[in-house]
Figure: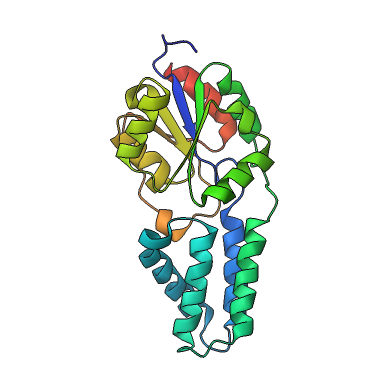
Length: 235
């Protein structure tokens, strides 16, 4: 790859950047609230489930398995231990359904990765369940386009600094693109790289953050189709 560019390495987030993800969580959450409708109203259930997800991140990490365990935990809590075994079985089935859902690429995802892979070192940097992320990447048909794939437990400035040094010329010559300001943009900028926000229509509450408006290494795009032009302009 050319080394005379300002940017030589580009990291792509996976879920809700390259393919749909949060929409399946929302559908499963609706299924969860319907199963427990006799015990609590939907808003209360959503709040209790989100609280369980937040406190369980350190134990289970990100992804479907942690979400499923948090649903089961919340069901036990709101029913004071009286949740029927049939409901627990339904929640486990809902989790398995999520792990088997076919991949739906987002608009311009393939074109953006393919175009930039010709001129830059492109990486997939994602967090979540290892087996689930590997499955989604294999089904996406994008795997052969990436020069490196990193599935991490969390996305922090230190993680980005390490990955961009391992796969490229360091964070100052790297760009990270994703739908999450909290995970994809802010820590990449804090590591010294560029952060590009491509919003998705749905964002998990625990991934919401304020954009670093005015920061010289921040940019926002309507969709991935604009990314190659932005990268070319940045050099």
